[in-house]
Amino acid sequence: MSGRLVRLVCIAATAAATVLAPAPATAAPEPGPAQDPASAQDSASVADLLTDLQQLYRKAEQATEASNATEEKLKKQRAETDRLDRALARTRLSLHDSRSAAGRLARQQYQSSTDISPYVRLLLARDPQHAIDQGHVIGRLARERAETVGRLTRSERKARELAREARKALDQQLALTERRKKERDEVRERLHDVEELLSSLSRDQLTALASFERTGIEKAQKKFMASGALGNSGSSVRRPSAEGGRAVRYAVRQLGKPYAWGAEGPESYDCSGLTSQAWAQAGTPIPRASQEQWKRLKRVPLTGLRPGDLVVYFPEATHVALYLGDGMVVQAPRPGAKVKVSPIAANPVLGAVRPDPDGKPLRHYEPPELPEGATDGSDEGYDGYEGFANEADYAAPAPDTSAR
Image (cartoon, rainbow, N blue to C red; front, side, top):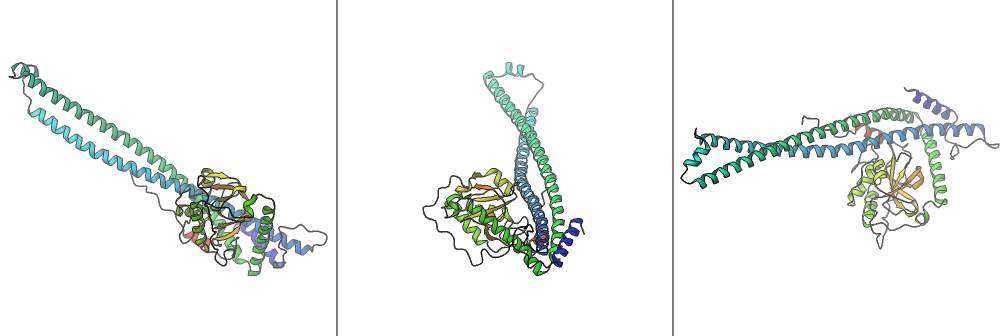
């Protein structure tokens, strides 16, 4: 058992001894004159445990999103390498045919040659002009053949160079993928520690932990909405583009499906898997990973948010959700949770991006009807461990490492 887990178990034991269930649902309150010291210890224990869990989840998601980005680059590199392989095969076949033709020409010239000098043949010819013309034709054919062979030889050399460059790039991507895999393995071990710890807690303790965080989210949402950060979009639903509307409807249809590391549907999703697939289904492909979505898509102010825009979280852009309107998003939160509708302030907001900045708002927009229980369930992921099991089963497609 790791040192971190030992520390967390100690925290849990302290929380159990003081009975977590009655803990006040506020964010780490400081003991005041009227506050019971035992109750303050309750809250402190839950707050410490919650902080550790959030840090582990965040590190895990950061590593996963980096891995997603690497896998996306690797897919493109595989496609480029395959293209170069096909071009090289065509070049080699063409070169083989050209060499065969040049060989035939050389044999014909050899078989028709004599010991008489071409100049003497020209003097003895009955029709010198015909001989000259014939010589010009043969010479032109020889030059054309030589030029063809030279050109195709250069093409083969260039194709080989490109293939080597593609393989080198692929090797670099493989090395990066391996490094990311090791990082994910390290985080997976920590998550298994968390899973073990969560499994050791009673239902009342889990309820207290979830309630503590839920109360913090409600407080953060209230403060966020009161700040005017969303402008008018916080009190009314703006009209999305046609593509944005389709992305919203797709995301809403995924409600209730489980979170799984690296998944992009249709049975389960991680955060950026959900947003990328929603926009792909809408007809506008976007980058796979949340960091790439934040980096490459058009940034928009929160005051101008419209349904379908992507809300990006944390300074490292390691989490993303799809904006619905009225200060709510649809997201795949984290392991143990399911795709659900959440307050926009469920995580620290970094900013927002728009996949279709040139898309014209619809003249009329009717928000999709949310199914019953769309906002129910845990944003925290403490109600089950499906996400952990799915992540352990997930494996990215193995790159082709055959000789080029």
